[in-house]
Length: 295
Length: 328
Image (cartoon, rainbow over all chains, first blue to last red; front, side):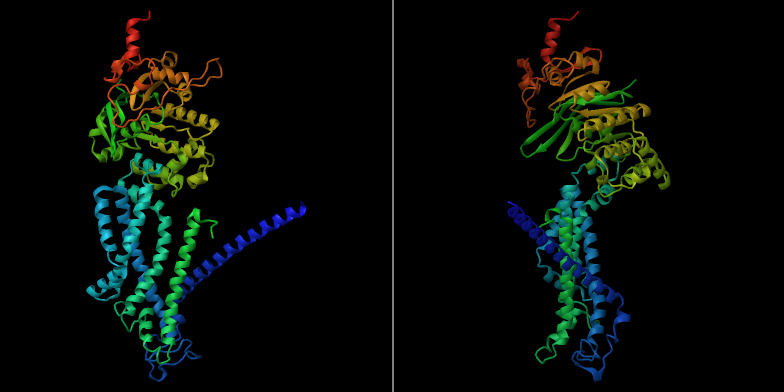
């Protein structure tokens, strides 16, 4: 009897330990990801202090240096220091992605909130507009916009923002459909608030939790899009350093053995996007009670 | 003196794919100045819809299908939206059934109240804050400064309802609609909340419409009672006559269904269920549940007739019985 009890107690303890370990492990990963994001942001902000060389200054005698003590991540065909360029490029990539996400989020919030709350004609017009945008593959649409509007940095931001607007609009609209039936929505109406205030001050903040998750995930996707656009020459233009453009320059040197020109910008993209995705995922778990304790 | 609120022939309909739901069917209802009127009926009898109609806040697919609502002589249904908005919250206020969900979860409760002073009385932020704390104290919330910063989920149900009442009474409305204000609360807290409502109503001279399905609450608190069944108003009387001489068969059934501990009376549930309001037939909607039903009940809706002073009932059977055997 006592051995039975202690055996089952042991099993429970083991299972608890396993659950705890899984939680810690998952949290460790998210914490690492969060740390990575903060580090990248920190490096981007401190680029002038951190970068050992001028990112845009060619040095004829230093071309195509392999990673080593003088140039930790090597140099490119013009002899520019890769590390310096990657750090400066973080500024561009993060800023463009952030600006695009902010723009898409703002537009999506306004459109989605109005469509969801008002319903009827407003809803029809907004949602058909969103459907139209979604009918295009996002990347092709972004390509088309930058190709047509000219590839200034501002156009890249707008192009990515436009492809992201539907995500937020639909999400906010569906949340608004739920929230507008809540008793506090009714209460806000009975005390004589203006409709605008009810929508944007009382109800919109209640739609935010899933949107925050989506925005974090979309941030990673936006970085990927900036890099991809630049990779095919439609995004940020040289000589401005940008991860995608740097990877594109390096791609043709892989065969001749200069792997570092391609590898390090590529890694930068991967690590950043992965970090945003991991943080987004754990935010979803945190904000969604149904996911708590699962996995 | 003219009643504060005069509802005449009010109908509210909801247009659905299956047909039209007549949630409120041509009701007349007066709320006098300073009184507490109980609006009683089963779930789905149209009590809450009537309250929302007074605010002109029936949302599609619902609509006010007819009738008039006069507040202090002004026709609310004819007012421009902007003026109606100024009446909401300032002159007519509402207390909701589940206070926890009626308070916005992302705003501290104090800010929600302070907002009203700024919206309707143009107070400065500091003045609004001062009055908010005063109001929170008035509804019996200890440590108002601390509680004002709390969110709804940090307060108990009773506290939430006190906040809700503070909010409703903040701008000294002349009419307060309380929609089952004690449903989610335990009995002792419920009693406190009702006392609070009555005291504050008396102090400010506001009329209160207490929407409830609890006749016990009505007996203890109200001056007059209106009984609704399936969207129709069947009886309206002062509290005393209603409980002593319930006239409508539905009211009689309701009164019999009150559990009593003081007398040897068996409690009887009201027979039948609330009929579907979808494309409801003409006539009295209680006909199918009524023990005294006549043929005419199913075809023509009975008009309300005065039975005594302050006692009106809409029922053919009752009326026929009264004419046949006048009490003397």
